[in-house]
Amino acid sequence: MQETKTKINSFTSLKAWQEAHRLTLLIYKKLPDFPDYERFGLCDQIRRSVTSVSANIAEGFGRQTHKDKIHFYHIANGSLTETQNHILVAKDLGYLKKEYFKETAEQTVLVSKLINGLIKSIRSRA
Image (cartoon, rainbow, N blue to C red; front, top):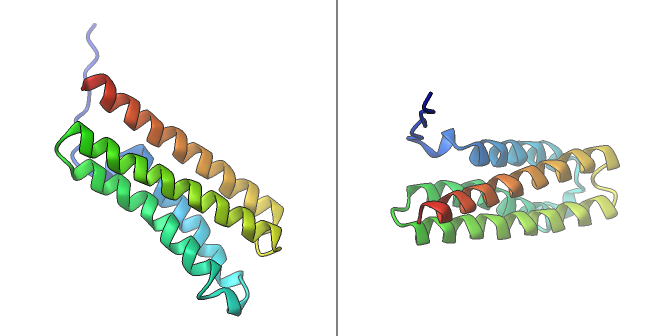
């Protein structure tokens, strides 16, 4: 019996994008709990880095060459690492409770694995 592969027609169908989007929502829900003085500091940094993850997955999906796709998926991974740093700082400053930090950190690990899976998949087709 031959396995059929489903063609993915939209970046929103990518599991990596879906989980990166979930990560964004997880983090955005906690930002209002940060002190007001962090609104234009750490909060902005976290917003930029976490939204960059799913945005670069989407952009990579839209690129035509394997090289371009991989390039944007690597950028997404870099933004994810930056986000991991920011949430660690937020936890250490007491802005994120340990349980919430754990859930968010675990989500970043999942997203990283999925992005790396996308990169491996593209390299195997190249």
